[in-house]
Length: 260
Ligand code: F6R
Image (cartoon, rainbow, N blue to C red; front, side):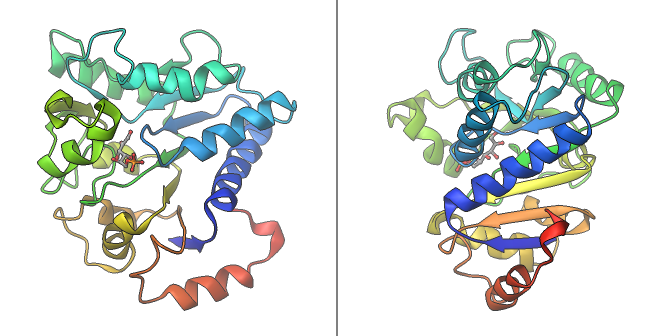
């Protein structure tokens, strides 16, 4: 696990750089896309690089991490619509290249199984972008999630619904209770995971992710078992890391050729 502590713009550029490098080496790469505030700087940077002709998504595919259950097809906060607005419509993915779990499916179990099969069919995710919840969730794998879980329906915690109320006009009652999310084992199947977190509200979760014992109480800690994770944090999100000085000096001494 590599931890990079830098300013938010630098973190977004680093993640976008890793994606640009991947797509240059492997134009038909498979990306994993997160929703929420954390990846927005990365998506802005990718849109900018695409407009400059530096990166194309024409052959790439992407899988979303999660989706609310029951939000109307045209609801602006339905994650399929958020991803379309924030990244897919700003670059050149082919039609149908971006998929997400079907939060409006009648048969949720079958929809989740189909989603797992679709990811497997393309050979898995090359690079997964992740945010992290203040309660340590990744995807919507809330505390207590099985560390071996696959895509399934989950109930959001009150903490997550309160955190996300800002996207629903501040009204927590409008935040759905249920979601479909890739499981922790599904996420662990990605070949490279880039997790980005900024702000003091994420400091405790980042401390547990990097330095805590692996536990379903802090689901992101499963990433300690992954061979290639880049944790990108600003100084506020890093403020509870005991090893912050070590991570800063390691990154300062990192060979330029190495990338994330
Ligand atoms: C979003 C997702 C969530 C968010 C997390 C942090 O697809 O899976 O795990 O990444 O809730 O959200 P923000 O980035 O809004 O703080």
